[in-house]
Image (cartoon, rainbow, N blue to C red; front, side, top):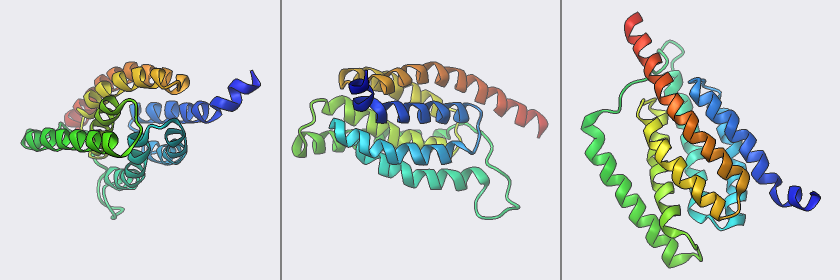
Length: 197
């Protein structure tokens, strides 16, 4: 048991932080950004150790997006600016968003195949590219960010079981369920805000 705990302690810790993060996201709580920051720093170490290089690199992007997301959610630099409301993903951005995501996927795949010993370049590059776009949608507080995360979470769950990261894999399985519930909760919150306004 000690050997198992020693081998998986970082996986378990980042899993606990990930659970706190998704619960805070579900509640649309700004504290998700603080928890996410710590989780991402530890994630860099975990993913590097497991050879998930695209996921490791993505954590650096997440750190920057944590700061960006925090400021987006509080409404910018002014204490008088209103907090960002939940909105729909603008249709005018959809084509560009899809094109950028596909380019990211192809580029990350090429980098993994060309410069790493990754054994799962297709899945690793897919979840990374979609996550890069998904965290931006979360920072902008778009309702549809939950749909992006459902796709990421399903693939990541399978990938992490395959790569022997069982606690994080289980967490991503739970993320799928929370993401579905989160979508409906955020949709209700968005409607309540419109009704009040």
